[in-house]
Image: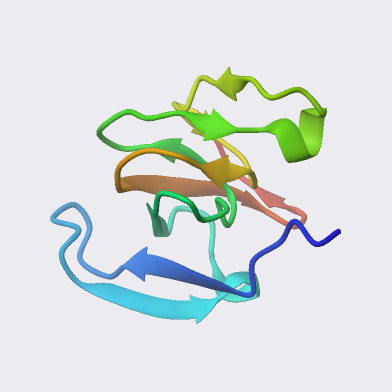
Length: 95
């Protein structure tokens, strides 16, 4: 089972979040602003900048429960578009 996405959408004009760019997931840098899209997997661990929704972590936890979306991880995102700051990708981590 593959949990990691190959591509991610980042915003290039934070804090406005109107200009998007598709990049390879491994190119996401700590503090990039990542666009979270409903029905897609979350490409990296992150902190939501604004808005709220739920995250389906059942692929990771085995339980079909929604978590607090203020902290996201590489799970499936369920409702509304949200911008989130990337805080961890691979071995790089900053909170």
